[in-house]
Image 1 (tube, rainbow, N blue to C red):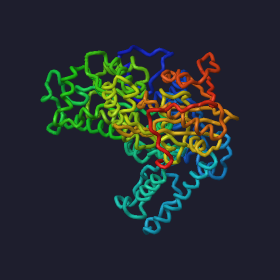
Image 2 (cartoon, rainbow, N blue to C red):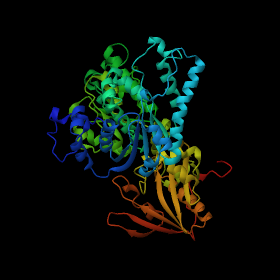
Image 3 (cartoon, one colour):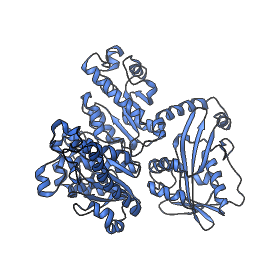
Image 4 (tube, rainbow, N blue to C red):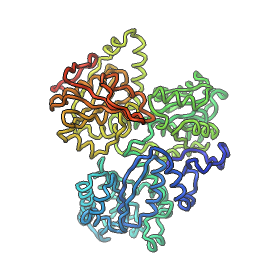
Length: 614
């Protein structure tokens, strides 16, 4: 679940919700969600374009409550989940010895809902360090068997709970340090799980989630003994929210931009009235320190690749002065797009989306003003607008609770994303100096690495297939194992493209994947980052695709354009490249053919690295 904004029924800003309107789960109390689950599911499921996903849940406990909540949050996130729940306590047997039902179900994801009560054997209280190592290895081996078996038989993504702290600490504070302490054992086991994690084995950090909820509110002994439930309803809800965030991360539904109001959001006070010297920021007062802490949180998001943008009703010159305040942690160079004027904020947010070439549904908007939040939420489709209230010390915690920026992997490109967008601004300014566009392209001194899929880049390739929406001809999504399979399939051609220029390294920004069908290559996927639009990279990718295709006897390329709400910019992609239209369905799906017999290379502005440079 992603908190979307004020409770419209409480605030009365937008009026009561109709029966046909999609409800926001964040506006319901947990007990109401559980009580009204079927009705909420029916209304949420009426939304169009839900993405099917199959999830098998294997548990050491009863899983119905977590499954019910997870189903709702996934539907709200744009999925159409089909869930399979194994019988209570059979997670090891079903995964290792009797996987037939799982194989028949063919899940995209297997979730292992285990807890500290599923640990088979703790070391004795008088255990030595050597004993602890042996017990750890025995427990780890059991889970390794599960992960290996699921990987071999199902080739799917696995989400594995780590372990919450034991309810009782028999040795008191020594429980965390002595080799016979259960707390020490759980901590060591969690560390081992962390080092076992991969892009196909994702850890659901139950230890941290339980700590945030509070162990006394996480576990109820009566529910465990009576119903074999690992968690309280509050704990189940926190688990389901975390799992939904992970699934969103797997399928690229992670938010990319944090849009910030300024006055009383980024600093205390109204800069236009109070003056830059009077805004609350710095370390001198508790209030100023709280705003500084929030700025530090925003900067930490920026440092992990989340773009920061400003959308404020202010005079721009005055608004910019706030970032020049000596105590401001955020500086102007941290802001990827700056809109400070007196236009409606939803219009400015739409302008930010256009400038960044990103959909507004990848934005999170933060504003202390509830009226502005409500208007933006109502006017900008898909944007997330958390109800942050007006107490700055809570802003970061509320944004974190929304799990908007959950990722399942962390690449070099993620770290450098904000810098890449800033380099694009430099390129735009540089472009204005040239009357001839070809001369401008040559001046960029572009160099491309275009080659068949390599193991080194499969994570990034998977990430791109699941997050690129605009320059994406078919918007087909691929799981990691599907990309891995394509990389070694002799009848598939998968190529990636990396691009550098005089301003910096754009990273891996384009992918084309085709499947040999007789003497034709069916192009199932063609995508490119909008960061490198109009750089002729598609011409260079086509040249390389043709070269690889002709090498295996391909005489024609078959291209398909499947229209979505976001990929209109590539509706004429194949027309521009000279493909011949073959057919078009009533819903706009176009098919093209391209004869390779007389193909001549197109790229003239990008130098390709040769084999000795790759």
